[in-house]
Length: 584
Image (cartoon, rainbow, N blue to C red; front, side):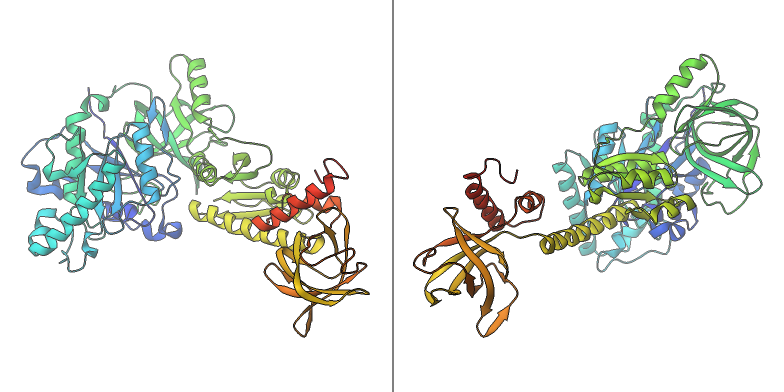
């Protein structure tokens, strides 16, 4: 039986060079046209064996490979990386983890490693940007690493090794055994590391040779396919193409897909049955999301391949969903597809709403949100609708009246509904920045809320009557105090530790100036209406700002510092002597 191409996933930290690596391999410039130069959708690049042989040249040593080439998937390279799914496992057979050799491991790198290990996906490490090591003598283009090293001084080669071994140590701390690929004898036990310059192509032949070699040696059995088996794949994107209507960008990972086949495609609800009207395959080294030339029509296609499928009706199909040729036990296939299309996202009452353009994006942004401690009440694929606005606007706490939209539009009826609803919509096309924008908005909103709360309600305050600072005994009593916690303002009433009244603040002076409030740490003079020093109040007394019970309840959710919380707790104890559960 024939062997298919292994599916290769490329991932890593933002800006560490994974898209540039693929650009160099395929000779296109997709990276420069991606939003923020960070790939957000999953595309595919076919690299045939003859191209690999051409790039690697004499490095192959005349070895013949039965693996027909490599099929690269370009996946989001930040911490929210979620592997595309397929029946029975993950879409990728092997992965390339791109690490900037100068920056080392970043949080996104570590998360990628965690996901790869959890999924059991073997990977090699591309140590990128070796040309940025000070003093590196750059090459002129794609070439083997050995040629690049010949140009370097002995000191430079030492610097390179030093950086490599530092990363080897960091990987070891994470439980990953890795070494330079030239030092490895058992590629099954060790993760190979290949130094590269993604921008120019130095070390790219080494990388391709290691990939094809590992696939040939360890994956031949798993890559064997049935030539005539029913096709199975994963939908990468749903696109509207001029003259074709809605089309599906698909990775076919098993079997054969033929013109006229009855297929089922994953939707947000139950799978949809339709027929294949056209199969379009990009030419080798052409990226299916951003082709330079027209696709070639095919009557049938075998795995593994990145293809565009035109169906009679694929309305409702979602990116990340499955696509299956209907053959055999149809009820079983439908049930399996329903399970495949489900997204595992924790939702809870009192959270925000998340909308995204694809299942993979939705999984990624929800994963990132959960890691950031963000509660989610609803997560769906699709544009922001009026129903979403209404739902967000009735979600209890105003801090949850938020919709995060990734690569989606706000529909006209939603914009109209927003005029009468206090709902914040935050949209973007780069996942980690969208989360950052939300966190920035939330921080600002909380500060505004706390500021409004401080203006609306009486705030906790605690003062100490200072010795030798009685300037008038009564009518009004004028005494010097130190503000121990919170703040005090004119018009506020003070209460003593025994629950007796301590007077009403008529005015506050600091030196020669009358001020509107005194904050923690300040020493000021208070003019107090009501008490007489030596009778109702005395030097050394500690008094608290009195407040209505409702204000105390509202302060339970306010952002108070430790001393303010302590002052409020003391007030609770004083008040509870008169009324049990006061302010609760």
